[in-house]
Image (cartoon, rainbow, N blue to C red; front, side, top):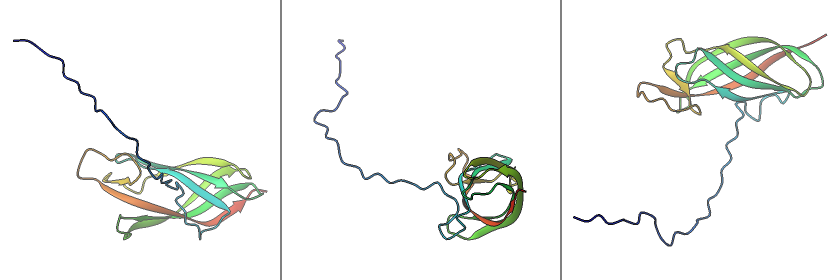
Length: 138
C-alpha cells in the first residue's frame, strides 16, 4: 500500500465584490434628543450588569441623567421598560462608560448583538434608551 499526497487547495478562484454594510451602534433613535448619544450597549446572557457609553454633546457639564430603557423582543414587542437615574460626571463633548444593574434577573435574555450563547434556552432582545432629563452641573 502506498500513500499519495492529495492537493486540497482550489484552483481558479476569483474574488467577488461584496457590498459592505455598516451597522450603526447607536441605541437611541435619530428622533431622540441630540444632547446625548448612547452607544456600545452590551449584556451577555449570564451578565448581572448592563454596560453602554453615553456621550455628552452639549457645551455644559452634566452630573445626572434620567433615562428610560425600553426592552423589546426581535418582533418589536415590548418585554419591559424602566426608568434609571445615572449619577456620573459627564463633561462637555466627552464620553463616559455607564454600568447599571441588569433588568434580566433570571438571566434568560441576551442583547442581540452580543455573542450568541450555546444554550437554546436564551432569548435575544433589542433596547432603546431615551433621555428624559439631564441635570446640569453647577
